[in-house]
Length: 126
Image 1 (spheres, rainbow, N blue to C red):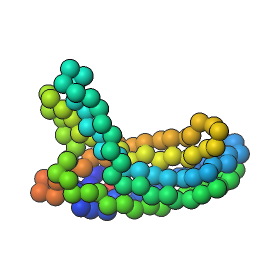
Image 2 (image 1 turned 180 degrees about the vertical axis):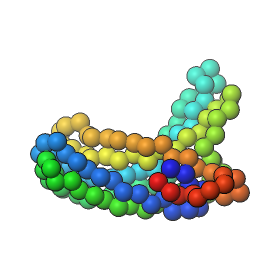
Image 3 (image 1 turned 60 degrees about the vertical axis):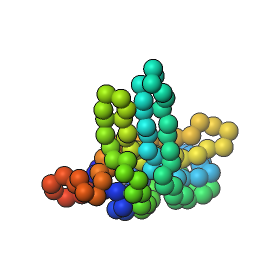
């Protein structure tokens, strides 16, 4: 998945439960991760976008649910990159929040470009 800063990230979350499942919230987040080698600093995660897709939902086996979402990729001059001194990456993380139980979480990496450094070919396909 590739997007340029300032574009709208459109996506779809598909939930296919294997057993009955009650969740308090279904949400997706766009997260920027900055990593600096341990001897130089640390890792910092910043939530750049968040969408609550549903609340208080019951899921059943063999009954998939689909949630569409859209959020803006911020213009921060922080594209996906990696150097010897640091790295910046982006992910979309989906969470099925459960009360008094471990949340179900899945994530997918997103390539973010500055609007002036777009690769050849279609952007936002994914």
